[in-house]
Amino acid sequence: MSFTSFFFFFFLGVAAIIYYLLPIRIRWIGLLAASIVFYTAAGTEALPYLLGSAFLCFVAALILGGTDRKKKKTFSRLILFITLFLLVGFLAFTKFYRLFIPGGSIVVPLGLSYYTFSAVGYLLDIYWMRYEPEKNYFRFLLYISFFPHILQGPIPRYQKLAPQLARGHEFSYKRVTFGIQRILYGLFQKLVIADRLGLFVENVISDYTEQYGAVLFAAVFFYAIQVYTDFAGCVNIAAGAAQIFGIELEENFRQPYFSRSVDEFWRRWHMTLGHWFRDYVGMPVSASKPVKKLSRYFREKKGRDAGKNAVTLSALAVVWLCTGLWHGTGMNYMLWALWQGGIIAMGVLLRPYFRKWKEAARINDNSKCFRLFQMLRTFLLAGIIPRIITRAPSLDAAVVIFKNLFFHFGIGKVVNENGVILGWTVWDYAIISVALLIQFAVSILKERGVMIREGIAGFVLPLRWLIYIAALYAVVIFGKYGPGFDAVDFVYMDF
Image (cartoon, rainbow, N blue to C red):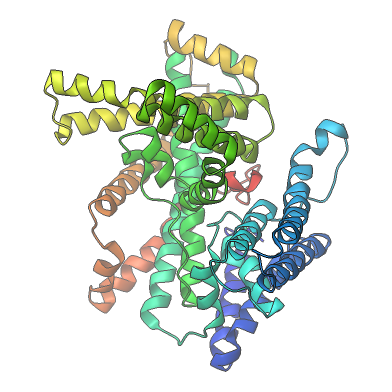
Protein backbone atom coordinates (compact mmCIF):
# COMPACT_ATOMS: atom_id res chain seq x y z
CA MET A 1 0.00 0.00 0.00
CA SER A 2 1.77 3.12 -1.21
CA PHE A 3 1.66 6.41 0.67
CA THR A 4 0.54 8.07 -2.59
CA SER A 5 -2.42 5.79 -3.31
CA PHE A 6 -6.03 6.80 -2.69
CA PHE A 7 -6.52 3.50 -0.87
CA PHE A 8 -3.90 4.54 1.69
CA PHE A 9 -5.80 7.70 2.58
CA PHE A 10 -9.06 5.79 2.85
CA PHE A 11 -7.27 3.29 5.09
CA LEU A 12 -5.71 6.09 7.16
CA GLY A 13 -9.08 7.77 7.70
CA VAL A 14 -10.80 4.54 8.74
CA ALA A 15 -7.91 3.60 11.05
CA ALA A 16 -8.01 7.03 12.73
CA ILE A 17 -11.79 6.87 13.28
CA ILE A 18 -11.55 3.38 14.80
CA TYR A 19 -8.58 4.42 16.94
CA TYR A 20 -10.45 7.32 18.56
CA LEU A 21 -13.63 5.29 19.01
CA LEU A 22 -11.83 2.59 20.99
CA PRO A 23 -11.42 2.89 24.77
CA ILE A 24 -8.20 4.76 25.44
CA ARG A 25 -6.48 1.86 27.23
CA ILE A 26 -6.75 -0.46 24.20
CA ARG A 27 -6.11 2.04 21.45
CA TRP A 28 -2.68 0.52 20.94
CA ILE A 29 -4.47 -2.67 19.81
CA GLY A 30 -6.21 -0.63 17.13
CA LEU A 31 -2.82 0.64 15.93
CA LEU A 32 -1.46 -2.91 15.86
CA ALA A 33 -4.44 -4.15 13.85
CA ALA A 34 -4.06 -1.24 11.41
CA SER A 35 -0.34 -1.96 11.01
CA ILE A 36 -0.97 -5.65 10.27
CA VAL A 37 -3.68 -4.76 7.73
CA PHE A 38 -1.33 -2.23 6.11
CA TYR A 39 1.45 -4.81 5.92
CA THR A 40 -0.68 -7.64 4.56
CA ALA A 41 -2.05 -5.32 1.85
CA ALA A 42 1.36 -5.68 0.20
CA GLY A 43 1.03 -9.49 0.22
CA THR A 44 0.36 -12.07 2.91
CA GLU A 45 3.46 -14.09 2.00
CA ALA A 46 5.73 -11.50 3.68
CA LEU A 47 3.80 -11.38 6.97
CA PRO A 48 5.38 -14.52 8.52
CA TYR A 49 8.85 -12.97 8.14
CA LEU A 50 7.76 -9.88 10.07
CA LEU A 51 6.02 -11.90 12.81
CA GLY A 52 8.93 -14.35 13.06
CA SER A 53 11.62 -11.67 13.24
CA ALA A 54 9.70 -9.80 15.94
CA PHE A 55 9.15 -13.01 17.95
CA LEU A 56 12.81 -14.05 17.66
CA CYS A 57 14.01 -10.66 18.89
CA PHE A 58 11.35 -10.53 21.62
CA VAL A 59 12.33 -13.92 23.06
CA ALA A 60 16.06 -13.23 22.83
CA ALA A 61 15.57 -9.92 24.66
CA LEU A 62 13.63 -11.66 27.44
CA ILE A 63 16.44 -14.20 27.85
CA LEU A 64 19.08 -11.48 27.93
CA GLY A 65 17.03 -9.39 30.33
CA GLY A 66 16.71 -12.30 32.75
CA THR A 67 20.39 -13.28 32.60
CA ASP A 68 23.16 -11.97 34.80
CA ARG A 69 25.52 -10.71 32.11
CA LYS A 70 28.53 -10.65 34.46
CA LYS A 71 28.14 -14.25 35.62
CA LYS A 72 26.94 -15.70 32.32
CA LYS A 73 28.86 -13.55 29.84
CA THR A 74 29.50 -16.40 27.40
CA PHE A 75 25.85 -17.50 27.39
CA SER A 76 24.61 -13.92 26.87
CA ARG A 77 27.01 -13.35 24.01
CA LEU A 78 25.96 -16.63 22.41
CA ILE A 79 22.27 -15.66 22.54
CA LEU A 80 23.09 -12.21 21.14
CA PHE A 81 25.31 -13.60 18.38
CA ILE A 82 22.80 -16.23 17.25
CA THR A 83 19.92 -13.74 17.16
CA LEU A 84 21.93 -11.08 15.33
CA PHE A 85 23.23 -13.69 12.90
CA LEU A 86 19.69 -14.80 12.04
CA LEU A 87 18.27 -11.27 11.75
CA VAL A 88 21.14 -9.65 9.87
CA GLY A 89 21.92 -12.84 7.97
CA PHE A 90 18.47 -12.97 6.42
CA LEU A 91 18.71 -9.28 5.50
CA ALA A 92 22.11 -9.88 3.90
CA PHE A 93 20.77 -12.92 2.05
CA THR A 94 18.01 -10.86 0.43
CA LYS A 95 20.67 -8.33 -0.65
CA PHE A 96 23.19 -10.82 -2.06
CA TYR A 97 21.20 -13.86 -3.17
CA ARG A 98 21.47 -12.91 -6.85
CA LEU A 99 25.22 -13.38 -6.61
CA PHE A 100 24.72 -17.02 -5.64
CA ILE A 101 21.41 -17.79 -7.39
CA PRO A 102 21.61 -16.03 -10.78
CA GLY A 103 18.14 -15.47 -12.20
CA GLY A 104 16.49 -16.67 -8.99
CA SER A 105 13.77 -14.88 -7.06
CA ILE A 106 12.68 -14.86 -3.44
CA VAL A 107 10.13 -13.08 -1.31
CA VAL A 108 11.67 -9.86 0.01
CA PRO A 109 9.49 -8.64 2.89
CA LEU A 110 8.27 -5.06 2.78
CA GLY A 111 10.40 -2.74 4.91
CA LEU A 112 12.79 -5.58 5.81
CA SER A 113 15.87 -3.46 6.46
CA TYR A 114 13.91 -0.91 8.51
CA TYR A 115 12.28 -3.35 10.91
CA THR A 116 15.46 -5.43 11.10
CA PHE A 117 17.47 -2.38 12.16
CA SER A 118 14.80 -1.50 14.72
CA ALA A 119 14.95 -5.02 16.14
CA VAL A 120 18.76 -5.13 16.21
CA GLY A 121 18.99 -1.75 17.92
CA TYR A 122 16.46 -2.83 20.54
CA LEU A 123 18.28 -6.09 21.21
CA LEU A 124 21.66 -4.41 21.59
CA ASP A 125 20.19 -1.86 23.99
CA ILE A 126 18.82 -4.71 26.09
CA TYR A 127 22.20 -6.46 26.00
CA TRP A 128 23.92 -3.24 27.11
CA MET A 129 21.32 -2.96 29.91
CA ARG A 130 20.02 0.43 28.84
CA TYR A 131 16.47 -0.57 29.76
CA GLU A 132 14.34 -3.60 30.59
CA PRO A 133 12.87 -5.78 27.83
CA GLU A 134 9.22 -5.53 26.80
CA LYS A 135 7.15 -8.32 28.41
CA ASN A 136 4.23 -8.16 25.94
CA TYR A 137 4.96 -9.60 22.49
CA PHE A 138 2.12 -7.72 20.81
CA ARG A 139 3.29 -4.37 22.14
CA PHE A 140 6.76 -5.14 20.83
CA LEU A 141 5.28 -6.20 17.49
CA LEU A 142 3.54 -2.82 17.27
CA TYR A 143 6.87 -1.06 17.83
CA ILE A 144 8.43 -3.07 14.99
CA SER A 145 5.50 -2.84 12.56
CA PHE A 146 3.94 0.61 13.18
CA PHE A 147 2.83 1.34 9.62
CA PRO A 148 3.94 4.99 9.12
CA HIS A 149 7.63 4.16 9.62
CA ILE A 150 7.94 0.66 8.15
CA LEU A 151 8.26 1.67 4.48
CA GLN A 152 11.16 4.12 4.58
CA GLY A 153 11.79 4.94 8.21
CA PRO A 154 12.55 6.70 10.38
CA ILE A 155 14.31 3.93 12.27
CA PRO A 156 12.83 4.51 15.73
CA ARG A 157 14.49 4.02 19.10
CA TYR A 158 12.45 1.81 21.36
CA GLN A 159 12.58 4.12 24.37
CA LYS A 160 11.23 7.03 22.29
CA LEU A 161 8.49 5.32 20.28
CA ALA A 162 7.21 2.37 22.34
CA PRO A 163 5.86 4.44 25.28
CA GLN A 164 3.94 6.65 22.85
CA LEU A 165 2.39 3.64 21.13
CA ALA A 166 1.36 1.98 24.38
CA ARG A 167 -0.23 5.13 25.74
CA GLY A 168 -3.62 5.92 24.22
CA HIS A 169 -3.97 9.49 22.97
CA GLU A 170 -6.96 11.77 23.20
CA PHE A 171 -8.32 13.32 20.02
CA SER A 172 -6.74 16.71 19.27
CA TYR A 173 -8.06 18.86 16.44
CA LYS A 174 -4.78 20.78 16.27
CA ARG A 175 -2.68 17.62 16.14
CA VAL A 176 -4.84 16.08 13.40
CA THR A 177 -4.78 19.22 11.26
CA PHE A 178 -1.01 19.50 11.73
CA GLY A 179 -0.71 15.90 10.56
CA ILE A 180 -2.83 16.60 7.48
CA GLN A 181 -0.75 19.69 6.71
CA ARG A 182 2.42 17.63 6.76
CA ILE A 183 0.90 14.90 4.59
CA LEU A 184 -0.20 17.46 1.98
CA TYR A 185 3.25 19.00 1.88
CA GLY A 186 4.81 15.55 1.53
CA LEU A 187 2.51 14.76 -1.40
CA PHE A 188 3.44 18.09 -2.97
CA GLN A 189 7.14 17.22 -2.69
CA LYS A 190 6.67 13.72 -4.07
CA LEU A 191 4.05 14.11 -6.80
CA VAL A 192 4.49 17.68 -7.98
CA ILE A 193 8.29 17.99 -7.74
CA ALA A 194 10.08 14.62 -7.45
CA ASP A 195 8.06 12.66 -9.98
CA ARG A 196 8.01 15.46 -12.54
CA LEU A 197 11.80 15.85 -12.22
CA GLY A 198 12.09 12.07 -12.54
CA LEU A 199 10.55 12.20 -16.01
CA PHE A 200 13.18 14.68 -17.20
CA VAL A 201 16.02 12.74 -15.57
CA GLU A 202 14.91 9.44 -17.09
CA ASN A 203 14.67 10.90 -20.60
CA VAL A 204 18.19 12.32 -20.40
CA ILE A 205 19.98 9.45 -18.66
CA SER A 206 18.37 6.80 -20.89
CA ASP A 207 19.91 8.62 -23.87
CA TYR A 208 23.15 9.69 -22.18
CA THR A 209 25.42 8.85 -25.13
CA GLU A 210 23.66 11.45 -27.29
CA GLN A 211 23.46 14.23 -24.72
CA TYR A 212 25.86 17.11 -24.26
CA GLY A 213 27.37 18.07 -20.93
CA ALA A 214 25.02 20.95 -20.11
CA VAL A 215 21.95 18.76 -20.49
CA LEU A 216 23.57 15.96 -18.48
CA PHE A 217 24.46 18.42 -15.73
CA ALA A 218 20.85 19.63 -15.65
CA ALA A 219 19.68 16.00 -15.34
CA VAL A 220 22.09 15.24 -12.49
CA PHE A 221 21.16 18.50 -10.75
CA PHE A 222 17.46 17.65 -11.08
CA TYR A 223 18.15 14.11 -9.88
CA ALA A 224 19.72 15.52 -6.71
CA ILE A 225 16.55 17.56 -6.15
CA GLN A 226 14.37 14.57 -7.10
CA VAL A 227 15.95 12.29 -4.48
CA TYR A 228 15.77 15.11 -1.92
CA THR A 229 12.06 15.82 -2.43
CA ASP A 230 11.16 12.15 -2.91
CA PHE A 231 12.66 11.14 0.42
CA ALA A 232 11.57 14.29 2.24
CA GLY A 233 8.06 13.76 0.88
CA CYS A 234 7.89 10.24 2.30
CA VAL A 235 9.29 11.47 5.63
CA ASN A 236 6.59 14.15 5.85
CA ILE A 237 3.77 11.78 4.90
CA ALA A 238 4.93 9.23 7.48
CA ALA A 239 5.31 11.85 10.22
CA GLY A 240 1.94 13.40 9.36
CA ALA A 241 0.17 10.04 9.42
CA ALA A 242 1.69 9.22 12.82
CA GLN A 243 0.78 12.65 14.20
CA ILE A 244 -2.89 12.06 13.42
CA PHE A 245 -2.74 9.30 16.06
CA GLY A 246 -0.82 11.50 18.50
CA ILE A 247 2.52 9.82 17.77
CA GLU A 248 5.61 11.96 17.19
CA LEU A 249 8.18 10.16 15.04
CA GLU A 250 11.82 11.15 15.24
CA GLU A 251 12.90 13.78 12.72
CA ASN A 252 14.65 12.13 9.80
CA PHE A 253 15.47 14.98 7.44
CA ARG A 254 16.66 18.51 8.16
CA GLN A 255 17.44 20.62 5.07
CA PRO A 256 20.68 18.75 4.19
CA TYR A 257 21.44 20.96 1.19
CA PHE A 258 22.13 23.82 3.61
CA SER A 259 25.01 21.81 5.11
CA ARG A 260 28.49 23.33 5.19
CA SER A 261 30.40 20.03 5.09
CA VAL A 262 29.83 16.48 3.84
CA ASP A 263 29.94 15.26 7.44
CA GLU A 264 27.14 17.68 8.38
CA PHE A 265 25.25 16.70 5.23
CA TRP A 266 25.01 13.12 6.42
CA ARG A 267 23.97 14.20 9.90
CA ARG A 268 20.98 15.93 8.29
CA TRP A 269 20.07 13.31 5.64
CA HIS A 270 18.25 10.16 6.81
CA MET A 271 19.18 11.19 10.33
CA THR A 272 17.94 8.09 12.14
CA LEU A 273 19.89 5.79 9.80
CA GLY A 274 23.06 7.79 10.46
CA HIS A 275 22.43 7.72 14.20
CA TRP A 276 21.79 3.97 14.02
CA PHE A 277 25.09 3.27 12.23
CA ARG A 278 26.94 5.59 14.63
CA ASP A 279 25.55 3.97 17.79
CA TYR A 280 25.35 0.30 16.78
CA VAL A 281 28.25 0.01 14.33
CA GLY A 282 30.64 2.94 14.75
CA MET A 283 30.81 3.01 18.54
CA PRO A 284 31.33 -0.77 18.97
CA VAL A 285 34.08 -0.64 16.34
CA SER A 286 35.71 2.30 18.15
CA ALA A 287 35.61 0.39 21.44
CA SER A 288 36.90 -2.90 19.98
CA LYS A 289 40.27 -4.28 21.04
CA PRO A 290 41.90 -4.20 17.55
CA VAL A 291 41.01 -0.52 17.10
CA LYS A 292 42.20 0.36 20.60
CA LYS A 293 45.48 -1.42 19.85
CA LEU A 294 45.79 0.46 16.55
CA SER A 295 45.07 3.74 18.30
CA ARG A 296 47.71 3.05 20.94
CA TYR A 297 50.28 2.32 18.22
CA PHE A 298 49.65 5.58 16.36
CA ARG A 299 49.52 7.57 19.58
CA GLU A 300 52.96 6.28 20.57
CA LYS A 301 54.46 6.76 17.11
CA LYS A 302 52.76 9.93 15.84
CA GLY A 303 51.16 11.59 18.83
CA ARG A 304 47.78 11.94 20.52
CA ASP A 305 45.93 13.36 17.49
CA ALA A 306 47.08 10.46 15.32
CA GLY A 307 45.78 7.96 17.86
CA LYS A 308 42.44 9.73 17.99
CA ASN A 309 42.23 9.84 14.19
CA ALA A 310 42.95 6.10 14.00
CA VAL A 311 39.80 5.42 16.03
CA THR A 312 37.69 7.88 14.04
CA LEU A 313 38.84 6.63 10.63
CA SER A 314 38.47 2.95 11.57
CA ALA A 315 34.87 3.48 12.64
CA LEU A 316 34.25 5.67 9.59
CA ALA A 317 35.53 2.97 7.22
CA VAL A 318 33.28 0.26 8.66
CA VAL A 319 30.24 2.55 8.85
CA TRP A 320 30.55 3.62 5.23
CA LEU A 321 31.18 0.06 4.06
CA CYS A 322 27.91 -0.95 5.76
CA THR A 323 26.13 2.14 4.41
CA GLY A 324 27.20 1.30 0.87
CA LEU A 325 26.04 -2.32 1.22
CA TRP A 326 22.72 -1.12 2.67
CA HIS A 327 22.08 1.09 -0.33
CA GLY A 328 23.01 -1.57 -2.90
CA THR A 329 25.31 -4.46 -3.70
CA GLY A 330 26.71 -3.18 -7.00
CA MET A 331 30.17 -1.70 -7.45
CA ASN A 332 28.58 1.69 -8.08
CA TYR A 333 27.35 1.84 -4.49
CA MET A 334 30.74 0.76 -3.19
CA LEU A 335 32.35 3.62 -5.12
CA TRP A 336 29.62 5.95 -3.88
CA ALA A 337 30.36 4.94 -0.27
CA LEU A 338 34.13 5.21 -0.87
CA TRP A 339 33.65 8.74 -2.20
CA GLN A 340 31.40 9.92 0.65
CA GLY A 341 33.47 8.29 3.39
CA GLY A 342 36.70 9.40 1.73
CA ILE A 343 35.65 13.04 1.63
CA ILE A 344 34.74 12.92 5.34
CA ALA A 345 38.05 11.17 6.15
CA MET A 346 39.98 13.84 4.26
CA GLY A 347 38.13 16.48 6.26
CA VAL A 348 39.25 14.80 9.49
CA LEU A 349 42.89 14.49 8.42
CA LEU A 350 43.19 17.94 6.85
CA ARG A 351 41.23 19.84 9.51
CA PRO A 352 44.36 21.34 11.18
CA TYR A 353 45.69 22.50 7.80
CA PHE A 354 42.33 24.02 6.82
CA ARG A 355 42.28 25.89 10.11
CA LYS A 356 45.75 27.34 9.49
CA TRP A 357 44.88 28.21 5.88
CA LYS A 358 41.76 30.10 6.94
CA GLU A 359 43.70 31.98 9.60
CA ALA A 360 46.40 32.90 7.08
CA ALA A 361 43.80 34.03 4.55
CA ARG A 362 41.84 35.83 7.28
CA ILE A 363 38.60 34.09 6.35
CA ASN A 364 35.68 34.60 8.67
CA ASP A 365 33.83 31.29 9.15
CA ASN A 366 30.57 33.12 9.77
CA SER A 367 30.66 35.43 6.76
CA LYS A 368 27.74 34.95 4.39
CA CYS A 369 29.97 34.55 1.33
CA PHE A 370 32.07 31.82 2.93
CA ARG A 371 29.00 29.97 4.23
CA LEU A 372 27.49 30.10 0.73
CA PHE A 373 30.75 28.77 -0.71
CA GLN A 374 30.71 25.91 1.81
CA MET A 375 27.08 25.03 0.98
CA LEU A 376 27.74 25.01 -2.77
CA ARG A 377 30.90 22.95 -2.28
CA THR A 378 29.03 20.43 -0.12
CA PHE A 379 26.16 20.25 -2.60
CA LEU A 380 28.66 19.48 -5.37
CA LEU A 381 30.66 16.94 -3.37
CA ALA A 382 27.75 15.12 -1.66
CA GLY A 383 24.76 15.87 -3.88
CA ILE A 384 26.03 16.03 -7.46
CA ILE A 385 29.22 14.02 -8.13
CA PRO A 386 28.25 10.81 -6.28
CA ARG A 387 24.73 10.93 -7.74
CA ILE A 388 26.22 10.40 -11.19
CA ILE A 389 27.75 7.13 -10.00
CA THR A 390 24.48 5.77 -8.57
CA ARG A 391 22.07 7.10 -11.23
CA ALA A 392 24.02 6.10 -14.32
CA PRO A 393 22.92 2.73 -15.81
CA SER A 394 26.44 1.34 -15.29
CA LEU A 395 29.94 2.39 -14.31
CA ASP A 396 30.85 2.66 -17.99
CA ALA A 397 27.89 4.98 -18.46
CA ALA A 398 29.04 7.07 -15.49
CA VAL A 399 32.47 7.45 -17.16
CA VAL A 400 30.80 8.66 -20.38
CA ILE A 401 28.66 11.14 -18.44
CA PHE A 402 31.70 12.53 -16.60
CA LYS A 403 33.55 12.78 -19.91
CA ASN A 404 30.72 14.70 -21.59
CA LEU A 405 30.40 17.00 -18.60
CA PHE A 406 34.03 18.09 -18.96
CA PHE A 407 34.76 17.81 -22.68
CA HIS A 408 31.41 18.21 -24.47
CA PHE A 409 29.70 20.90 -22.45
CA GLY A 410 27.07 22.01 -24.93
CA ILE A 411 23.30 22.01 -25.32
CA GLY A 412 22.65 20.02 -28.49
CA LYS A 413 19.18 19.30 -29.84
CA VAL A 414 16.71 19.08 -26.97
CA VAL A 415 13.39 20.06 -28.61
CA ASN A 416 11.47 17.54 -30.70
CA GLU A 417 9.02 18.26 -33.50
CA ASN A 418 6.13 18.54 -31.01
CA GLY A 419 7.85 21.20 -28.92
CA VAL A 420 8.56 18.80 -26.06
CA ILE A 421 11.84 19.60 -24.34
CA LEU A 422 13.44 16.37 -23.06
CA GLY A 423 10.08 14.96 -22.00
CA TRP A 424 8.76 18.23 -20.60
CA THR A 425 6.30 20.63 -22.12
CA VAL A 426 6.46 24.36 -21.44
CA TRP A 427 3.67 23.74 -18.91
CA ASP A 428 5.92 21.31 -17.04
CA TYR A 429 8.69 23.89 -16.89
CA ALA A 430 6.28 26.48 -15.49
CA ILE A 431 4.95 24.11 -12.83
CA ILE A 432 8.38 22.92 -11.72
CA SER A 433 9.73 26.48 -11.55
CA VAL A 434 6.95 27.60 -9.20
CA ALA A 435 7.12 24.37 -7.19
CA LEU A 436 10.88 24.66 -6.67
CA LEU A 437 10.51 28.28 -5.57
CA ILE A 438 7.95 27.16 -2.96
CA GLN A 439 10.22 24.31 -1.83
CA PHE A 440 13.20 26.66 -1.56
CA ALA A 441 11.23 29.30 0.37
CA VAL A 442 9.86 26.73 2.83
CA SER A 443 13.34 25.26 3.34
CA ILE A 444 14.81 28.67 4.11
CA LEU A 445 12.04 29.43 6.61
CA LYS A 446 12.53 26.06 8.32
CA GLU A 447 16.30 26.56 8.40
CA ARG A 448 15.74 29.88 10.15
CA GLY A 449 13.51 28.21 12.73
CA VAL A 450 10.21 29.66 11.51
CA MET A 451 7.28 27.50 12.69
CA ILE A 452 5.30 27.42 9.47
CA ARG A 453 2.48 25.12 10.57
CA GLU A 454 1.95 27.12 13.74
CA GLY A 455 1.77 30.25 11.62
CA ILE A 456 -0.90 28.77 9.34
CA ALA A 457 -2.84 27.51 12.39
CA GLY A 458 -2.95 31.12 13.62
CA PHE A 459 -4.84 32.36 10.56
CA VAL A 460 -8.58 32.92 10.72
CA LEU A 461 -10.64 29.81 9.94
CA PRO A 462 -11.72 30.67 6.35
CA LEU A 463 -8.18 31.59 5.27
CA ARG A 464 -6.72 28.53 6.98
CA TRP A 465 -9.06 26.13 5.20
CA LEU A 466 -8.60 27.99 1.92
CA ILE A 467 -4.89 27.18 2.19
CA TYR A 468 -5.63 23.50 2.94
CA ILE A 469 -8.02 23.18 0.01
CA ALA A 470 -5.64 25.02 -2.33
CA ALA A 471 -2.82 22.66 -1.30
CA LEU A 472 -5.02 19.63 -1.94
CA TYR A 473 -6.07 20.89 -5.36
CA ALA A 474 -2.45 21.71 -6.23
CA VAL A 475 -1.43 18.12 -5.50
CA VAL A 476 -4.37 16.63 -7.40
CA ILE A 477 -4.13 18.94 -10.41
CA PHE A 478 -0.36 19.38 -10.71
CA GLY A 479 0.75 15.99 -9.36
CA LYS A 480 2.44 13.89 -12.01
CA TYR A 481 -0.05 11.22 -13.01
CA GLY A 482 -0.81 9.70 -16.36
CA PRO A 483 -0.23 6.77 -18.77
CA GLY A 484 3.09 5.06 -18.31
CA PHE A 485 3.73 6.78 -15.02
CA ASP A 486 3.94 4.97 -11.69
CA ALA A 487 3.28 7.14 -8.64
CA VAL A 488 3.75 4.21 -6.27
CA ASP A 489 7.50 3.78 -5.85
CA PHE A 490 9.63 5.90 -3.56
CA VAL A 491 13.37 5.93 -4.20
CA TYR A 492 14.29 4.65 -0.71
CA MET A 493 11.93 1.67 -0.92
CA ASP A 494 14.63 -0.09 -2.96
CA PHE A 495 17.10 -0.01 -0.06
